Image (cartoon, rainbow, N blue to C red; front, side, top):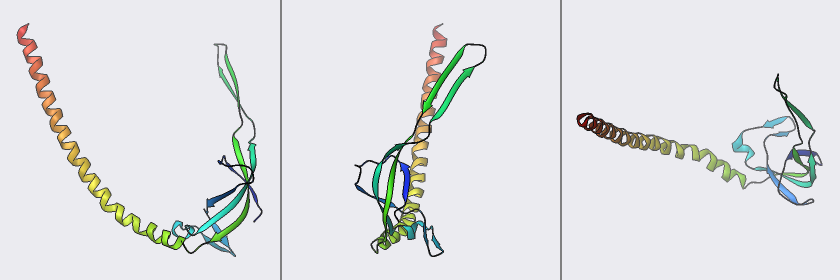
Length: 145
């Protein structure tokens, strides 16, 4: 704890507390990276302030045309100080829901596939009618001339 990290820009005032999800937990040589288990861990951090990253210089040049452009960029970051890592028991319910949700989404995806196939066939039928009407119009135009 008390580590200072540089992360992408976060919304919040200097000194305010932020809760971040854990991505990887290492506890006495035990490494936890399973998203179901990580759901119960949360990291609290304090915003130290906004900083800018290193300057990146870019030069655009095209040969024999006189085209030259010089550009510079500094990415904005937020420094945070880790104040605590907690393992709440309420996250286990989230983990069980997360495990159950793929089973629920699988039939929905299958039905979505059927729906898209059903939608595709009327589209093909209407496309065939359009082509037939288009060919009749073309034939009528051919008879007039």
